[in-house]
Image (cartoon, rainbow over all chains, first blue to last red; front, side, top):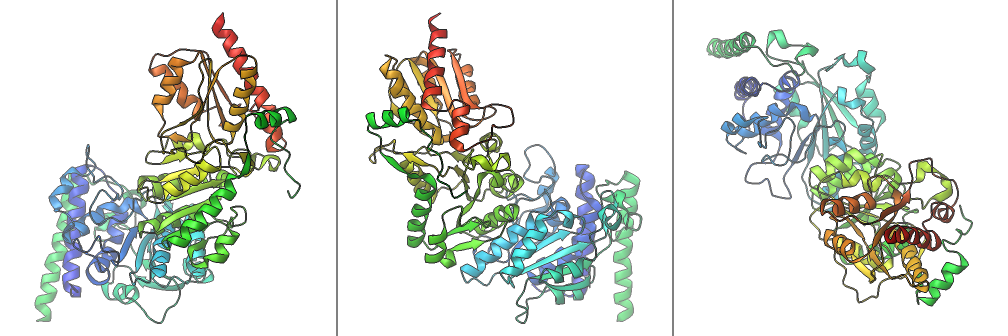
Length: 283
Length: 336
């Protein structure tokens, strides 16, 4: 199941296309944050998580909880690609009586926990990780948190508990795109420096490029040497991959116009072409 | 806090309890703690999760006997409920124990989303509920919890009226596949049920049958209704007393039957007059077209009077005397 960097890069382009397609189709979605976390999900679901549609009921499966639930479209396209459900089902995204609502729910195959209200995922992940310890199971719990989301105080309650119980089976990732709906996180209500804060809370902290597959893989891989919970601060760009969406708060839940949609898809096509060219040059 | 709590009953009420043959049991809190310990000894999958509340929850012996089955999270109720949901998601049988006042307001969003909406069958135990903490003031009272949780779907609500009902609901909660909120206080209570009573969640218990007035009560206020029924009998008034231990799902049949068989209804609860058992019963009766004199004995929309739990109950007429008087007033209305 381990894909090469090139295969992952191709998948990331395909995921970005799918995400935009379904968001455009539904007329709603969290575009900017989905584009910032898609490479993280790509690495998790192709290189890290021991989970599949067949093993989803297995008590030993790895857990992934998406605390920043609003970026659910990114999760939907990755789960569809991993075979949890046919991607065509996303035709019903945000429609009447569809399980594919605008935040994760367990009604969708592959989803562990209902999220959407911010500041909930880490506590639930701590609970699952404690259960793993109690039952001597070797599963790991991964949780993705937004940097703006870290303003919710419940995260810090959970961070304390995770360190108190030395949950080395818990790996949290911050999608550190430095933007939230109203603007720059440091301007809205500064919660930096995140690395020092989590270190002070007793976590092992690592900062990586959240769009670099190798850095993500190295940071997310299991480690026998670390005896504390781990925080991976993944530096990302909101709107990554579409030039006019990058690093702009207005794309938090912006839906592209027809012209913008066409332009975005062209950029992703260009990215594919340049990948093919560079592969040719390398040969 | 260490001074003995003033009695919930006047000498007259105590005399009535004696006349009715009621024996004083212990606090529901103690019954809960002992029952949970017994069950947890037999079932290692059971966990008690606390927010610095093992003392208030009488879980000291539990922590000592089963240190691996208690998870302490410190004074952090939001995390308490989130962690409980995570534990339940991984198959543990989880009792999250915290004072009702903090559990159901501080952690309401976690209850709504991580437990009820996510369908993780956590057992939420609201200890020292209602005005159990009496003189500690309104920060420590939970007079809103039934109202807010009634409006959250996928969670049952149980308020046991004596030790028997407490033990039964704790035992029956273990394997229930949906979330449940169980709340009780810490004052010693009279035993109201025979140990042979059949206890079913969602089915009320008729403790006394009668045709003039029906008391539909829940939790620690049931005792006062039983005593009021005894007092009313002395003046020739026949009372039905229903222990509505399950507030959700509500035993609507018992309410309708009372509405058809009796001349008036008084509901009794240690809760705000808004959104609790009383309004739930009123809605059931009204939607069935049953209109009889009806009153909600509960706590009014004001800053709660200060004092012990007993003082507060007496002040608002949740006592043998207060309830008997209320019933007489309603019945006079009915005879006009």
